[in-house]
Image (cartoon, rainbow, N blue to C red; front, side):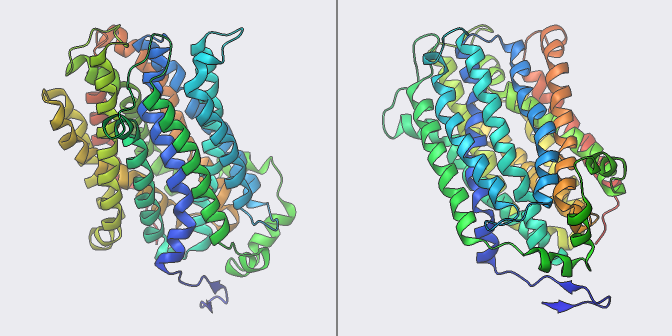
Length: 449
């Protein structure tokens, strides 16, 4: 470490191996998220949910994130234990997530007073809360450990590892069926065995990945953190209270407010994609009836969605590694604008696809956008946040992820039912248009170095 012109110590450069170690846990988190994103609608429809009702169940995720992430961020800023500052939250969230991953696909066997669909929705809520407990501190950890010069690289490597977890998680049900012959159909009200086994595997991967980061990554001590921000962090530790969150919201940096519109368009569109891709492809490409969720054709469509979600995550994994070089050449704002435009083209193109194999081509654009969405906004944001507030502001920034998802869940039901005539593919086209709006909005962000 060395001192800058103000006397404040600068953070040492970390090796690629150290950055990978601190981000491996996110691989496990995204493995679980990929299983949820690719299979939750399928599971809930199997338990009896109608297509226009799906957004109501998916609302659980952003609502939980809206509540949990700022609180976890606030307290992780002020947590100092023998295990560290962020790591206790990784581990606690991982334990809860593993339990939920094992229980959700078994909701049909756990019913007593409640119908399977409500048990499944409850497990989805627990799973989302657990993911959020583990996830938010990982964003703050990258900013904690890395200097501004390495943050784009850090978030890009994190995104690449997210891609690894998401690819394998998305493909896991198809792998279990195609390679090991595990059936992908089940009787009405039950979940196919390939999905159940995939969730069990996801629980194991989640826990092992979190433990890898907990064991291999050392966090800076309170004394070291105080030296990095000239003592301001220590003062915050001494005088901070829970109600400071409301003041932090009122005084959020200008760049965070500007990124709000970009994030709104991105995450409204992403939520629409996650909720409606399975029914859209089943109806628009496989020719399934609107209320058909138990036929072989529908299950094949569900497996195909897992495959193409794996494709966009695979693309994101590799494109994330190119992001630091592209951003260095044209800037972070232009990089993100280009990526969102590629995602828009990919989503809109699904409407014109008739051959299921061509869906992988559409997902190339989505993967480029996804890589940038997971890296560029955080890299732009981190430069405008004081170290003493890194955790809480990363949590508050989650408002711009969760609120658009909540609105998407509320608005998409009447849109799909009354405007789109229950043709879910139009929700994907709308998502693409929103990506284009976000691409324009990001060009006006004040990106500080």
